[in-house]
Amino acid sequence: MEWTSEQLIAQEAYKAFVDEYVDPFADVWDQEERLPFETIQAMASRGYLGATVAREFGGGGLDSVTFGLLCEEIGRGSASLLSLLTVHGMVCQALSIWGSSSQQQFWLPKLASGAIIGAFALTEPKIGSDAKNVETTATRLEDGSYVLDGEKKWISCGQIADLFLVFAQFEGKPVAFLVEKDRVGFSSKPLAGLLGFRSAMLASLTFDGCIVPEENMVGRPGFGFSHVAGAALDHGRFCVGCGCVGLSRACLEASLDYTSQRKQFGVHLREHPLIQRMITDMITHIEAARLLCIDAGRMKDERDPRSIMATSTAKYFASSMAARIASDAVQIHGANGCGPDYPVQRYFRDAKIMEIIEGSNQIQQTIIAKYGHLDYIKDQRVRDRKSRQV
Image: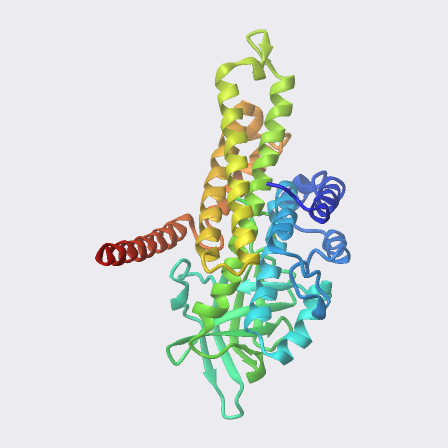
């Protein structure tokens, strides 16, 4: 695993940003359940919000591996801030692939600069993993515009977003629309007191006769879930997987610091074999997860069709690993790990959310098993063909 000089320079810049602007304040944000506007602007001014947007639209045009390094560092500082980078990037990705030329030219420069914030509106009160069957409806009017009716829930950054990528059903076909926050018939309601991601400023959204013009449709009817949402979710899973590596690093660093100071039975905790085993597992799993994420990133950059499975594998392993590591970090801290004086309780709560968002771990298992079975069938056909040739 060798980084280019550009990637090393970028990684140092990402780390310095998190050390100065994120890590010292993340616990306060968690308690206050908010992301400061100044921090979002600091990210925007550095080009982080448009990191993967093409340069022709004012973005950074980063390769996937470098973007993964950004996600890892932001995840190390705050999972809630990572959620902003994730959902904003999901809207950018969907538009970059499936948006019309006019949509790209109008929206992508604004999203890339951070002039507006994007959010991904798919989940509903009754619909989570079965996302292709959302209940929000779109009805076509005589002038070609559409009326949206329905509700979305658990929308990250829903309190502060200016533009939402919304999924609905139109005549039995999934469809995607861009909806501005100032549309008549649209409203949002803050969600508070969540287990994790408390400063991600989640909201529930209501569409009550919300009229959107035809030019706000992304893709075409029937492409809403399989294509538009699929592209966005693949981007989101990669971002979350890399962020889980960062969150796990934060757990490891907190545990190393604590075990070097805390004494039990006359010696530092780091001298106890059972603690050493926990630390060993943390280090090993973090390295393994990072390699899976890098592998997925390289496949994306090479446009390898296997990148979808690689991304699901990385997200599945990294989020599962982060939950275990965060649990061990709390265990190492004992009662101190359950209180507000140490960040591991926040890591523990946030890590659990990582196993749910952008496709739960059970959905990733389904995807991975499906691809594995298809690969097995393909390999078996190749072996049979070679056998017949012999």
